[in-house]
Length: 391
Image (cartoon, rainbow, N blue to C red; front, side, top):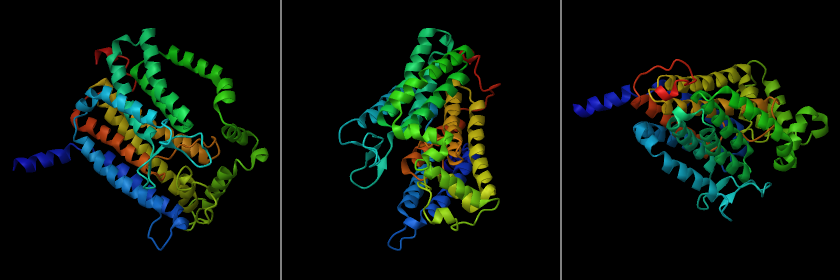
């Protein structure tokens, strides 16, 4: 009887709304990846390699999320020094000769680790995002009563810039931007004074020429210039031009699932990955795009609501960090597909193909479920924890 009661308790303490929203988004995503990769199916197999990998990652991810949710997040939080050390080591491993690999056309990029010659790859930066949310949330809570001290702000900036620097060195500009967005959002929500954000913005603006000339590759420069002068950079804009054409063909209701002219002809490069939103637009139309974005918005809002009810500032900040990962990647990815932003290799959460991104995303969801389960009820007046030190 006790076991039954305990099982019922576990069910009641699970945030089923968040879990079901994530599962629904992943099911939608797997369906679209299957449609985008039908052309790649070989040997009479029912699914392409990308679809199988994503489906396996989602199923494993759901199981891992539930498993992590059963671990008290207070315990997870206390392990933050170990989590930080492991995250650092995972990124450093990429720089060992013969370990880190990247696309064949980019020998300078080292973003993946090959898993035992199986043809599968793991992208450490995806897991490090979750590790950063945990360690930075704990760091902010530890110095909550000293956030006005310049020394503490410098140390927080060093903490934030370590993963940014490492992923830039590995050649992953997209992940670097995600880390920066999470860093800024968590600092803001922690109650850091606004004047420091203006100082930071001025420093970023001043650094733009150096970043342009010394950090960006020629391809990355051309992707920015292509938005301003599309006629001069037709080759580099090929992916986005065809992606936009695919979305235009979709209209209001779409051409029908598995019937997209551009998608099924394989005319949009990476249509199963970075450009999956173009597949949704072409085959399911504006209605499908709105449904996709509403699902992702609901997930972000639900994570924020869990944070707003958190009793501990660190737990709230972890929730806001996870919500930032989801929402920022959505904004940038959709901006890429709509030719508002250049292609910078950021996936659409829960929708884009990829084992690492989907599995690690669910580890983050598990953290939020743990906070929901073990945190109890409480109210935070707003997202900015200006009374942080008294929480």
